[in-house]
Length: 292
Image (cartoon, rainbow, N blue to C red; front, side):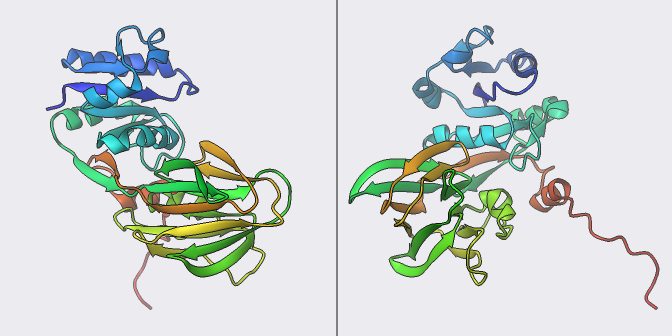
């Protein structure tokens, strides 16, 4: 039984504190203890504040208020502790956010009553090496993007899978995506939509200089190595579209499966293909009449 819940929210959303207060009061009426991070304590005084470390140890699950980006941030903070997440959508498309604000009472009631499943989502671990020395590590749920920072020039990315050379991409960049991220930037770059139950990784070049270059799908257990070749203009590593790290010439980026997964609380009312039809407008053609 759920007894303690953490709230993570996007403070830039309109009426976020009023909406958060409604949800918090609803939870408290059901004897659920609600916790927020210290920076939100003044805005939401009815909740007990905990540090991120304390929240990781105490809460049974986390509710995110915002869009998919809020879930990405929560996943990086809580996935390694195996804490389930559920999102209430205050954003746009919302592929991952399970509940709309209008039906949050029904959605959270189902969660509290055990009417849900847990869906595990692949995450990626990324390490940056500079002159052979590791300088930074990242985890992501959605995607890793190696791209040019600002100058309108292509970058050259020598790419290996399990130390076997794939090619040197001459492009605006390269997206390395999980199935979760296949409906995001990767899709815009021409990558495939991949069912989240598959354990694969997608490599999608961004505006490749060679037309023959196409997206590539590899196994979850494969290690991807990318070397930023000279001459290199300003380049940037981006994690989930939220965390940036400047890259230098000859930096090596290694990407592989993370040792843990994001646990998403899923309700039966949002199957994957229904979400695709709704969010991407896959309505198809309605045909009337018999065969001639």
